[in-house]
Structures are given as C-alpha cells and as structure tokens.
Image 1: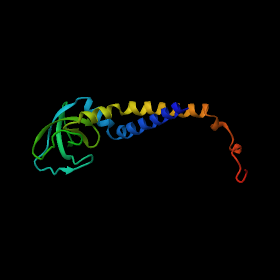
Image 2: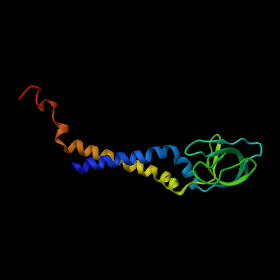
Image 3: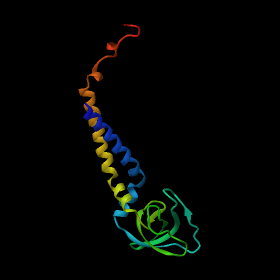
Image 4: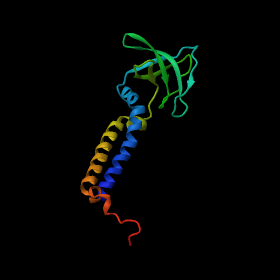
Length: 156
C-alpha cells in the first residue's frame, strides 16, 4: 500500500508540475516549435511596455510579413532573446495568431522543453494519480469498513 501512496503522490506532483506550465506556456511553445521565422519591425514611434511576467520582458507593438500579408501584433522577449526596441528590426518567431498576434525574439531552451513536455507530464500524472487512488480504495480495508468499528468515547 505504501507503493500506491507513492504512486498517487508522484502523480499529483506531475500534475502540479505540468498543468500550470501547459496552461500558461503551451500555446507559445508549440508556436515557437513550429518555426515560423519572421523579421519583426518595431515602429520608431512605438511605446514599449514592461511585462507580462516572468521577469521584466519588453513588449512592443510591431509588424511583420507572414506569407503574403502584413501582420500587426506584439513582439516580446518574454521567455528569452533580445529585447525589442522602438525603431529596430529584430528576428523572431510567430507564436500566436490571436488578437493581437504575438511573436517572440527567443525562448529559453529549458522553458521550451518544459512547456512542450507539460501536456505529457499532466497526462501521466493524472493516470498515476487516478490509478494510485483507485488501487488504494480497492486494496485498503479501511476504505470499505464502516466507521462504527471505531472505539466509542469513554469505553475503556
């Protein structure tokens, strides 16, 4: 039964390590891995802002050519790479086609691997957690017994 406890705890830890990263970084990591390289132009009159976390990344409004169209969006050094500045061109990769479109100038290798592995970590963690918990419920006799077998207060 100790093994089932360990299996359930390891499963819960894998879910805790994978799910938040998958939620926050999964889409951008898949976009980075798709390798849609672009040259991002940050207009001279753009005001760049700091954020969003982690760290103090610089995010600027920018444009780039994607296939046969000009895309307006944002460029950021959120997960690594050189900081974009007003009036510069910087190499980047498109990581999101939403509104606004998003390009990153870099992606730290450890963060990228973690974000790409996060769905697998979460899935494996859920399987281990459910398997361990199910095994505990089925094999531990305390789960099947009624609470009336506990000693009554004052009985000696």
